[in-house]
Length: 80
Image (cartoon, rainbow, N blue to C red):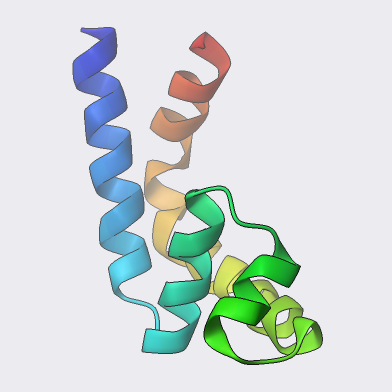
């Protein structure tokens, strides 16, 4: 059951990330893979400040998109 819940949370998260604009989506996906802001900036050829700004707007959008699923996400994260 725990694995199924984790898979569902991952699906919900990635579905929300897919709704972001292209460059912003790339930033979030690289962060989810473990890259820091400097590494993401180098890979995408933009400044670290651009990365920070786009991440901030992405988080606002993701909070809105994920608000209805937030309880399930928190449940899975706390259970780890």
